[in-house]
Image (cartoon, rainbow, N blue to C red):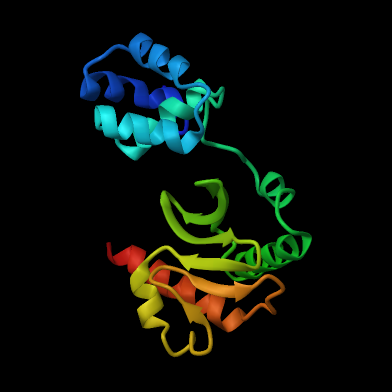
Length: 186
């Protein structure tokens, strides 16, 4: 059975090996820090033991009772946690893309809705308080779609769109097409 990488425990063998102590030692350390806030616990592990952010986060969150980093398993679960206007826009984005690319699979990865083609990610959406970020999975695609992205706020790997974005089908199809083309070349 494959290792569930979202499980906090999946980090434990590496923590023991890298930092030279059994997990019982680390759990005892966390009990001593239980009254401290998350940033203080993080700083303590990093400064005193050289923990990476990922390992410190896994240990801290496990000690707080969070056994997995996975919060959602379905799009429906995810959408119940976001602003209703954003949820409506996200549904429309995925519905539009799936209409033209029905074989793409909607999945939840990194607690965000994504589209996959086989084992490769193609597109994703993230939320903020006041806007959405859409992302083709290949940063080169953003450079290639520069003309279509005129007028949008473009970051290195994401494109900012309003929470109530009027779906730009032409842009979405261009991003997906370019991403799929880039994936087939890799």
